[in-house]
Amino acid sequence: MEVERSTPANGTRTETGRVRTNDVDTYYVRRGDGPPVVFVHGMATNTAQWDAQMDALSEYTTIAYDVRGHGRTGGSDRKSYDVELYASDLDALLTALDVERPLLCGLSMGGCIAQVYAARHPENVTGLVLADTFSADELSFGARLVFANLRLLGRLDGVVRYTTLNRLQTWVGNRLAPGVAGDGTEIQRVMETGPRIPHAEFVKIADSVAAFPDSDFDVTGITAPTLVLYGEHNPDVLVEMHERLAARLTNADVDVRVVPAAGHASNVDNPAFFTDAVRRFARRVFEPND
Image (cartoon, rainbow, N blue to C red):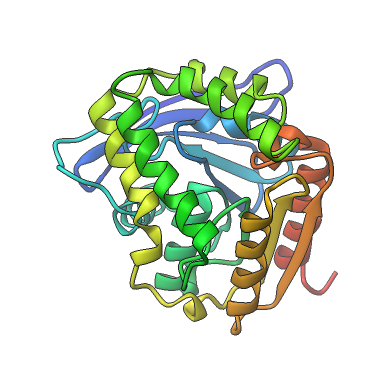
């Protein structure tokens, strides 16, 4: 386990390091003091996706990490990945960092990971935020196209790197569904913050998310209070996925909120609204009697 600690000018204690999670050394950032809030980023990004939330939520111990294949964690020799493996890595990370019963917040791919973890370990989740994510149930034709597009992106990365693909996706997406990709500038910055993802890793990552509907976990195993967030400019097919997901969380107290002026990366497109929603939810689950 590698650890570096510092206290920046704003006085918020910051810790970075790597811990062994299964067969990779997972890079993480931990800041602040208070009840734990753990953030799980989206596909092809890294811990920097959560900078605004971690800066603002200093009354909590906030933790973000680079999912296997991403950022400073990097890849492995495994031939393929799946969301179950990512959830196992998350479990190993929380154990190594002695984090118990966090509020778990995942966006897009990170929301898939958070769903599986919360269903597998309901006793160790105080609250769950699922943002701009996907549901693993019977898919409509439009939803199948979404996941097929992910597999296509993995293959195209061999010709045009994912950072360039993101620019293209932003341009096309905002013409087909205005606002879905925001302006793309901040996500592009996040992608370029950490080490580039090798093509072989990007294919494994894209395939793992595309295979999420085939996961065999039971979403009704999620019992923690859950906040479902999605950007108002998400296309109809993703809005329907969020509605279906909320309806299937039959054993959890579920609240659904739409993030205004936001697309598929709502925490980046409208960080003030997103962060306020997470803060209010955190207060409710960590301080239920106040």
